[in-house]
Length: 335
Image (cartoon, rainbow, N blue to C red; front, side, top):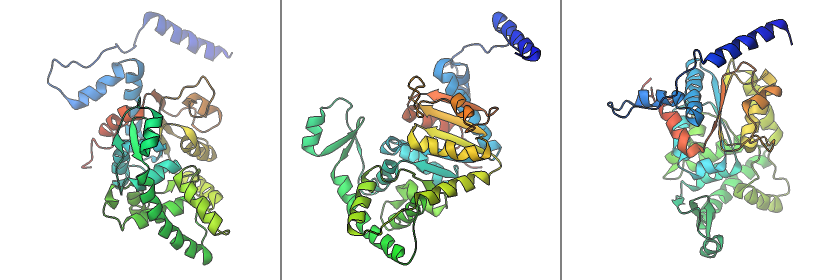
């Protein structure tokens, strides 16, 4: 160890031993008149994950203040839940600049333009729901008929896409999703759709595992019927890397894990890492999964700059993400 590093560690240990300069643990005082700004600020002194939530809010406000290009990732359960409406707000008002979503997130956003999902129960027997024709996503019920509406909508859409293919156009997943946004505009509830607003505002929506869901099943049938039906995944890989390289600063808000999370992290390797990162997840590090990997791990791969402000909020995103948006993007919405 270098002498200067040793001295720095000794200074830190001395500070730690005396607790000099450390913030006091303190919660919000509800005896006084309620103030939302002070309430949110109090999370930083809460301790445990409350403090990490407060840090996440500060980091996202720095992303906004420093005009970073903001990536948002979402697993499909985020769209199954009410977080779909929170994300739609961000896309509608151009608060974020690129999305990466799972296939389920894309299809469920479209499905909800026809019929909603409903609140059910975590504990009801799977056999009972199966016999009633209801799929379960945690405590969210998704009756099978929703997917019939989806198939009815998608079949003529694929006919149009295939006509373009015969003329020489090969779509990437993000281009296909943009066309979906254009297609859903014909429906009465199109303004409820994230995909519609992304199309309207020219915000790319990437889905590198687009076949992993009902959408992929429908593409399987297309491939059975039309042997030359093809989607260009590599084209999107080039697109997201080029997009990343062209930014002065990049930030990421990662809801959950999986390929949606990693696609953003991987693209930022090409610019030696993100400048800001906020992870919101219940996945932990102990099994060495990418979903559970923390920001320190990302730094070892140059996915995140070593001096980048970052935090991992170990919490379920339907609890904390609305609070985060309320105290960041929505706080100064008039501006």
